[in-house]
Length: 117
Length: 108
Figure 1 (cartoon, each protein chain N blue to C red):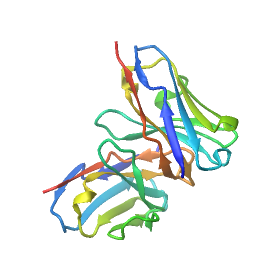
Figure 2: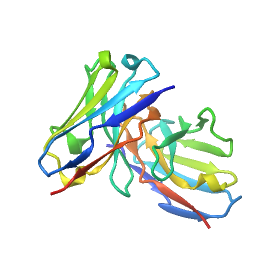
Figure 3: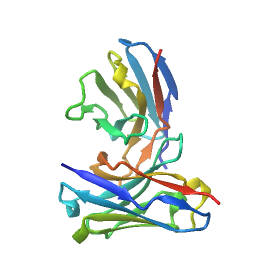
Figure 4: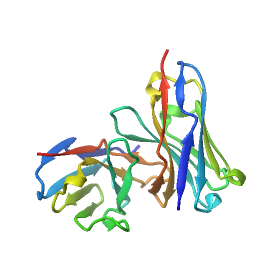
């Protein structure tokens, strides 16, 4: 059974940093692109970042470029999102997700990040 | 950037009704469009991929159609368990994605 379990969310002050983790199981993690998708409270879904199987290619939505870094450790079946210079508008539930040819077939349960003083 | 315009933003219908949601892309995206269902407090679930293909295990009352810039998602006979928010998502410019704004579906 495919499982994606996020952790690392919490309350952080504006300008602060946070690192999210996603533990993957039930599939060959190193064979798949991986994604982060977020959802602000009461709002819609927003794709945040993608990373290629070997980590050689990374893509970001414009609003997080230069502040967020997606990475992975295939030996640990883990995906990460390092978030720096956090802003109030980054407040959201962050989902770890597995895309397959453009369709996201598995999602984690999400972890809430709140940026507030 | 490709923009996705989804309508309506909310919809109220009765059990048994036929429900239709539309999604318009700002440029031709062929059939590179998916539809997701999200229930409150839950992660989204893929229902339709490549505009018209039903994901395994999804009831046949759900369907999708369209290509190019105009797409339609239909529930042929609304059931109480279909209450959710529905999103379209394009992937023409992989590996970047764009979601529509969502349609909140309620029971009348």
